[in-house]
Length: 189
Image (cartoon, rainbow, N blue to C red; front, side, top):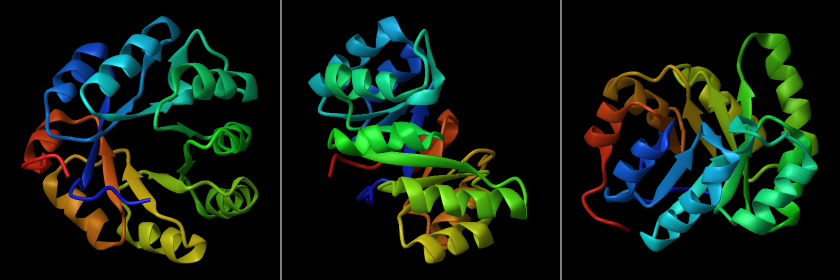
């Protein structure tokens, strides 16, 4: 999965941020923190503006992060895809034909090896690695898994975005609005 003409995937932490992104030229958006009652309106607004909304399933208040929640999100909310750290959520997302993005944390060598085993089992469509400021590990994860990699977490500058992209990241996820503005596409692809 690549995001043509979109090196940054803006990640909204609030409905106000999401509303600002709906007026942007970005096509692919991520909704991070949200409440279950705001999901349907958010998805409907995104669709009405021609946006592809990805929801971080682990960060929804009022919804347990399990297979039933993933089924609800896929069948009722119908985003473009889900992000999660949980293999069961990734599997259910894929069963429902939506894009499944597995989030992994690069804490140490042991966590990295456990993540490789998890990725082999869950077989996501895409991987988000955190923190996204480790270009060498971005390249390693991409090479070892053969899957598209998103870089997220602790990316604070345009130079760090560029370094992640140069290391092979398909895009960088960020909630930092200055980076959204800096990398905003000139038009919808």
